[in-house]
Image 1 (cartoon, rainbow, N blue to C red):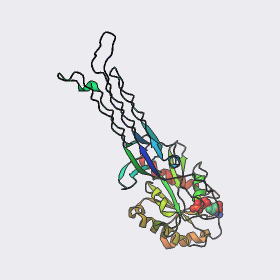
Image 2: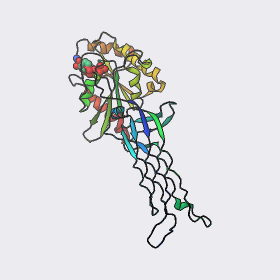
Image 3: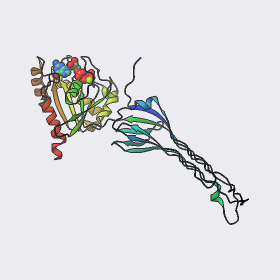
Image 4: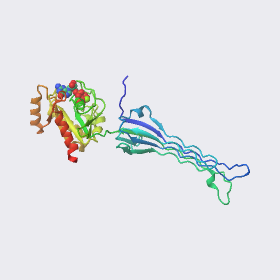
Amino acid sequence: MKTITFKDRVKLYVRAGNGGNGISSFRREKFVPKGGPDGGDGGHGGSVYMMADKNTDSLLDLYYRPHQKAQHGEPGRGKKQHGKTGADLTIKVPCGTIACDFESGEWIGEVIEEGDRLLLAQGGKGGLGNCHFTSSTHQSPTEFTPGTEGEQVVLRLELKLVADVALVGYPNAGKSTLLSRLSHAHPKVAPYPFTTLNPVIGTMTFEDYKTLTVADIPGLINGAHEGVGLGYDFLRHIERTRLLVFIVDIAGVDGRHPAEDFRNIRKEIKLYRDDLAERPHIVVANKMDLDNAAEGLAEFEKETGISPLAISAEENSGVEELKLALYDFFHRREE
Ligand SMILES: Nc1nc2c(ncn2[C@@H]2O[C@H](COP(=O)(O)OP(=O)(O)OP(=O)(O)O)[C@@H](O)[C@H]2O)c(=O)[nH]1
Ligand SMILES: [Mg+2]
């Protein structure tokens, strides 16, 4: 059986708490045979929220627990006492989670930064006790109102990663190897395509303690924008990155042509979303340690007019230059 370790899209049934009913009651004391009305109000029902939490990296928990409820409010009590308010429920989700109505697809909202909170279902209102219904002509009211129902909604939550940099390229180009050089993340590396099945985020920390987050996205192939390979599902994870790093296997290990790889990947991205192709990018030529890499690089430069940053992720050469380029892009410009 395949173990699921990551989920970036889930169906969620959310139910807020009902408001408690108001009640009808009269004051009874030893020497006051007919006291006035003292029925208290019902407590409000709890609401359901989602909140961005940077320690949550997938929607997996919700996939296994798709029914989420907040507490009901309690009914009012005698002596004009309010019923207890139902506790709210706050669901932790990864930063970058979007909520939509499941049926209509209508956009409800999103939480991007740590601590952002979004109301998903409003709790019901507590009803009124009979003590509210007295008037000069109506001294012993027995009326009270029931609490209202909490909202119930069926939602689709979807995650779009929030990272500064995305590593983009064909399967096997060396994206995961590179991520493990740039950060402390340990994505799986293997000599076959589609090793990485889920996006992985690594954090780079520089000497001055400034940081950058880098996302390793599963490899793209031709037709990715139409859902070929793992493509489409993951293309949305690059929408929120500020810089794309294209990784090209410059030695053409899998028998493809590096310049063509680069053109195809850019084409897929453009077909997925036009403006993504305009996003700032750095081109990296990987596997420079291999025999035919120098030749591949010369050809690439001639064909595309681009001089990529030449590295070997495997041998960790050229990686420092790439780190510097990333630092410059994000931090030096801000100084
Ligand atoms: N010779 C050489 N091999 C490399 C280099 N970088 C990665 N590789 C090898 O290429 C293969 C694929 O590397 P990965 O890092 O898994 O590639 P990926 O782009 O993450 O692949 P997917 O997850 O399948 O998309 C592995 O066998 C790596 O050891 C490099 O600079 N030089
Ligand atoms: Mg990989």
